[in-house]
Image 1 (cartoon, rainbow, N blue to C red):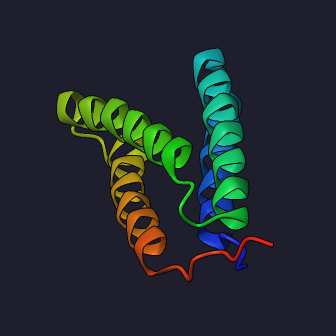
Image 2 (image 1 turned 135 degrees about the vertical axis):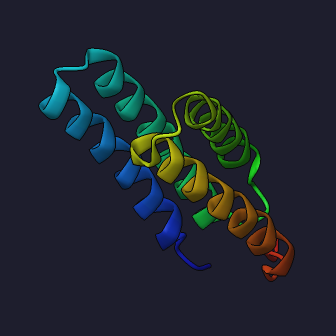
Length: 109
């Protein structure tokens, strides 16, 4: 059983981005969204650490966040934070799917 380190880093990055958005621009929606998405992604990383084939929560959350930020990037053209989170979400989506297919199946006792 391997720990999903990149999943935890991604979750922490999303949460830290929400805190940074609040500190920089006093944006309460950024704080709320960053902490909620970061927490859900952290739980998803925990689930995939326990069972690499349990990717539903991670995939769904990553797709929603990537879609929202992709839409914001399309409308604003700003790399930070929308473009960066769109790119990170795409990378994490591919990483999560590949990890689920290449993981060794768990043995039941």
